[in-house]
Amino acid sequence: MEKSIDQLLKKSRLSITESRVKILELFFSQPDALAHGDIEKKTGEKFDRVTVYRTLQVFLAKGIIHTIPTNDNSIRYALCREACEEGHHHDNHVHFVCNDCGSTTCLEEITIPAIKLPKGYASSQVEMIVSGICRKCKK
Amino acid sequence: MEKSIDQLLKKSRLSITESRVKILELFFSQPDALAHGDIEKKTGEKFDRVTVYRTLQVFLAKGIIHTIPTNDNSIRYALCREACEEGHHHDNHVHFVCNDCGSTTCLEEITIPAIKLPKGYASSQVEMIVSGICRKCKK
DNA sequence: TAAGAAGATGCAACTTCGTTGCAAAATATT
DNA sequence: AATATTTTGCAACGAAGTTGCATCTTCTTA
Image (cartoon, rainbow over all chains, first blue to last red; front, side, top):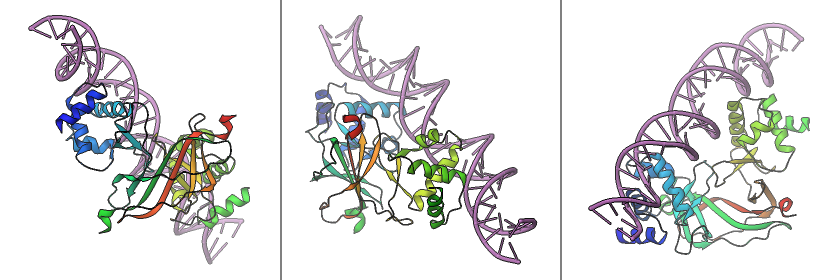
């Protein structure tokens, strides 16, 4: 684990620092997307707010994580699959937000269907966010 | 116009006040979705920040407007079609965000395609946000 | 249509969120 | 191991959003 995280950072030409490793471990240790606040809390408030902000920005720029828009004004972040490259995100999967437990997950196996835009519009990215009750909460 | 806005407010059992009327006029006078800040500016900063926040909250709760999640941490608001009722939004159209002019519009005529969720998930709402270049900017 | 009840507004104060500059510390490079 | 490069944490700041409360506006009904 340590190893593969180091690899990932090296591949992205980033120095291996404690905060980066810890934050990546956090992402790898569970399946949900995380908001900035979650990360601060779950790392035990060990790192400065500013460090967390900057770390997320760097990961975003390097294509290690991607953002998921929400309608509660709190962007969430999730790991990208291998396919993502620096500056270019290729995730076209559906995101699921649970109204019960609040978790946000990537449904990697569900591809966003193509749609036909009105004349004159050019699309460069499509987001699809399904909300409802997740598998865990439905039981 | 005045008349129909009054009607709308009455139908929602809301008192007819200057700020509510002015903010609704703003929404009706142009096709784009508006962020909180836009509304403050476009009403000539005539109303207190707090009033704008509260007005939007009330409109949301009454099903007069709906939110559009964005990935820049600024929720946008747009008018609902007649179909929306108090507490229940029925808009299932696609939203378009222009990367050039920044405008957010509802593509009322484009319906979100149905998708098949993994077993155990129940969907109650689907959002689809397409970003790219809008008709105006493409010219 | 005037008076009282109900509701909305604006102000002040506060919290949370996100950003920037800079010195100190950690990491990388030779 | 020494130096160059990055990253971190702190302090300070501005923007965004919330709450309580007194005042003003809108609604109700007699």
